[in-house]
Image 1 (cartoon, helix red, strand yellow):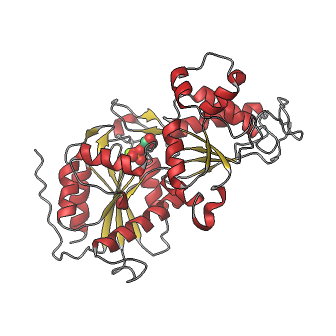
Image 2 (cartoon, rainbow, N blue to C red):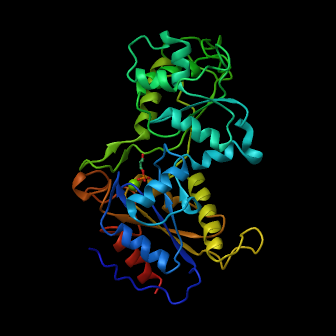
Image 3 (cartoon, helix red, strand yellow):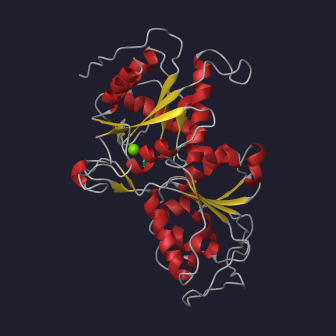
Length: 376
Ligand code: G3P
Ligand code: MG
């Protein structure tokens, strides 16, 4: 059993530093805890050292995923210190950013019906999934659909036969890339996002460089750019970034090379996600102090966050590039238990990672030991 021989800071007041832990490849390999992960999180909780879980994973509501993680890791976790790939999408359905709350949005992911429920929890009021479109227009996909029973069970009536769709969200890795890409391309070629139409400005052009102009098509949001991620197989697996590349490749062909796919991508390494995570971490840390960050003001400022990750292109690059509005320094710590491994090549000639971390350590326990030594 791993004994966690870490030296805890003296006082019980949360220290001016905290941790951000990636999940896949740092704490878990899919469902299996990585040795040392449970003991390390328990140590930090015992010594009042704040941390958040910051993952590009998704597909479950935060409450459900946190309950699942608590059970798998044997550590009591909360949604207060948990950010997954699509968590920031809440902001597009709430408050002054809530411009898409009442619009028709198309949502997809590994379990699109579950993603619909998550989007509704976030405050989106008109959520459509590919199964709804297939049920209303069975010939939209000319081949026998892969997930027929799932689609039949989860389809809901469309608000009208050919709705206008204002935004498309990919919440996590779709399973039926073919149907999803077909429907997304239909909408991206449409006039004003109305299913079944073609924009007269563009139409179905396959002349090289025929040119392409926006004509009211839906905005496109991806929650995670990961081309690879660390699962249970000994080598990295294709992630949501691969799905995005597939759609971008089809789109390039469909527009004769005239148009790059216009999209918004959040998730690590993007600064938007790091900024969102920092706000969650600061509020969580203030709560640990029994204070409300809005009333009593934040505790002594958070000076440093140690971002512990396994993927140089996401965790390390993001922490290295992020510029905190609060002046908090994000230090990147790369572990050897996930995507990156010198023997796999990539990065520099010696197999060093393409994005240079502050330090490379064996695993999450060594990462915390190293950080506590830095803190003296
Ligand atoms: O789909 C999950 C994968 O993209 C990476 O997750 O936890 O390593 O950020 P994580
Ligand atoms: Mg990871």
